[in-house]
Length: 126
Image (cartoon, rainbow, N blue to C red; front, top):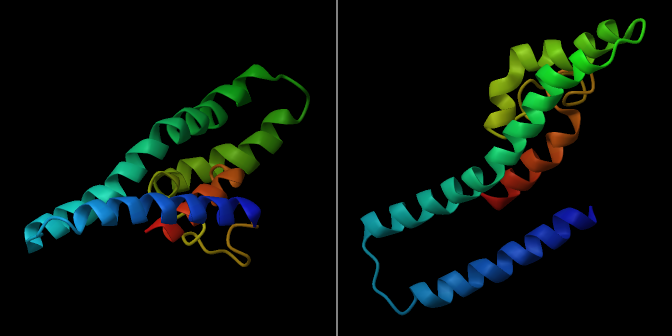
């Protein structure tokens, strides 16, 4: 996918800049652990607020706005029920791994189906 390629290219560029700055300093083990922890946590905190807004909007708000016949049956089966069960997997960016399903979520187990890209991107980032 071209977006994964572009994301990886930008991450590699930024990472090489950071490593260039770090090579000038001597690092202890505690500083190394702190750097790698913050490397992952900063990315998680950068993506999480937007994902929370989208997830809350899809999960709780959009289903209440439309009153078409049969809409609630479709919406509850497609979004509300999976979000009730697997909201935490979406927030941890592992929804493409757990719940697995037959084809990694094609059975409707994703809370937000299009957020699989964020999970894949986060896993490749780490």
